[in-house]
Image (cartoon, rainbow, N blue to C red; front, side):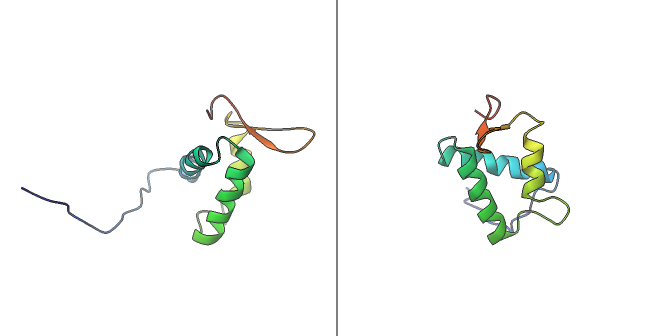
Length: 88
């Protein structure tokens, strides 16, 4: 009978930068009870600490990609972000 086998972590390079950040963003939405602005703030802090993004694709690019893909809406008056039905 074989027990646990541990190996070195290998990052999944098949996902796009958008998809990697989206997976993390969706997880953070669970912890923030759907508060998109707070989840994006946490994501920015995680990026600063762990370097999740690169010079080619940053958090600003990710936020701009969330809007046309239907995951996020921006309030015209306050500038606050709100999740859409697709994000729920």
